[in-house]
Length: 325
Image 1 (cartoon, one colour):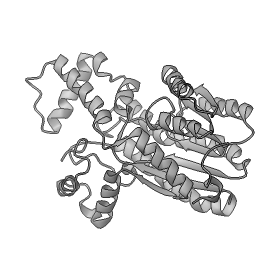
Image 2 (cartoon, helix red, strand yellow):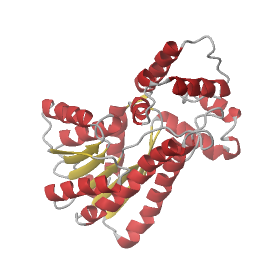
Image 3 (cartoon, one colour):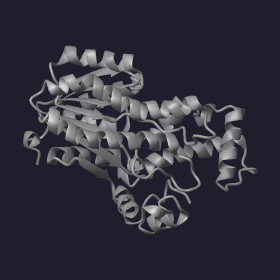
């Protein structure tokens, strides 16, 4: 157990990025439920307002500061930091949680979409860590909690699916956080770094990512629909008999299914993360599927990107809903 968190999070102050939905919302909810004051940002004002409403209606005692910010834009991150600094003299916890998907192919996908995913998932972690480290340093103790992914040690969604931008960003988050363990020990011994690597968690990331990239199935134009058909064809899926409207419905159902059929809910994942941080764990695998992937990659890394690897993972009951061979 981390000595400074042995009594939980009550009376502390935390920053959570991406607090409008998913694990970010749950971190805000569960922290404020314990009496922790939380500053949180998101790009979606309505989603942030809903998070606050949930916490207020539940009677959570922790205070909430909200701010609209795109974590990939340094000027917006610094404005968020300044708002937090005016609210509190220091923070005890920084949860770099915000993330989006997209930019799967380095070859086929547009550069701007690829870089948007990379800049949110890696740049958001880097920029917020830079911005908030003085406020962490000013506290008697501090915890920097960065969300990577199983794609931070396994850059794949199966051999037929390109997944480069997200994976590259999550590898960067993992390496950065692990390097901070030694850096903090040498230069800021009152701080701790934690890397979170979730498997399939039930969140709206697929839905939100589509909207942020301009690929909302309900609003896709003919050119975007044709690109989807081409992607399915490369994966061996024939969509010639599927109408454009039915394809839109299938895409929407897939994004909703990612959220609704996940083996681990956002609430379960966030509780586990908070428990692990309080316990002092620096490496946090979230979900049984994350543990299976970790074990299989370590056991035989040479086949990690082959169909045989996926067969082994599926045989152990992991990632059947989102990983294809």
